[in-house]
Image (cartoon, rainbow over all chains, first blue to last red):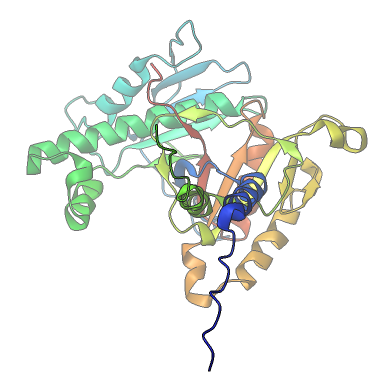
Amino acid sequence: MGKRRDLPEINAGSMADIAFLLLIFFLVTTTMDVDSGISRKLPPMPEENIEIPEIHKKNIYVVLINKNDKVLAGIGSPSKMVEINGDGSISSSLKESVKTFVSNNGRLETSSESPEKAVVSLQNQEGTSYDMYIQIQNELTKAYNELRNEKSNQDYGKDFDKLDKDEQKLVKKYYPMKVSEAETKSN
Amino acid sequence: MPAISTASLPDIVFMLLFFFMVTTVMRETTLKVDVSQPEATEVKKMEKKSLVSYIYIGSPTTSQQTSFGTKARIQLNDVTFSRKEVSEIQNFIISERLQKDEDEIPYMTTSIKADASVTMGIVTDVKQELRKVNALKINYSTKKNKDIK
């Protein structure tokens, strides 16, 4: 067999062009979709014959957002107007009131008996804006997250996100996030 | 100065390419409604994107406005619906369920991507329909903003 000639090298200069083309293709056809959000669990549809359990008024903290995006909040019935800051954000007083309400544990006669019984009832009207609704949901979530964080620091000396699954479950059990958007019967 | 070797240029580009392939999703549906999501601080990333169904709510995009007007519409996959046709959501969820395995069904969530200016009336209707089909795990899609006061 005669000596083969050296095969000519393939010019790899256009590799970069091919790679750029593929890159641009992907840039154009895909989206960096926003995949973060606030998770909720909806209540199941009430069955015909099951009675809605009556909850004592003092265990319900009502937050009502009306069609002008004004927020009223109070125990039992929405009585106090929640201040909204000049830039449209909710004042932290809503978060503090919710925290005080949930962690009351029977201290005040007029407030909740225990965190398990404490329910936050979120009501809105037809014309309420979704943005304000999300802001309120955010404040409620913040209130519960802070309560859970305080408890986890108290019990385990660590922040809530540093706990393992079982410890998190226990803290969540102590402060279950009961945000109801269904009408609750109160006596 | 000796000429800089550009032999590794394609490698750099491939790295960028792989990055984009991994972090982005192939856009399955073109948005027919404008959705500019509200911002919130207490948001968590959604896991298991394969088990998420998306419901978009917003006013139609300018190209769609000629046929659909400006009132808020609901988009499921490729088709938009008006508020009166909100019961279509039930069929949508059922067909999404058929495409998944039996044991994955309880882990399915519905992501509601609604525009910040949408009114709650339509969102409440959507949530009612989801309750009717027992799709109780929902997620309000929001952008993360670290410092809302």
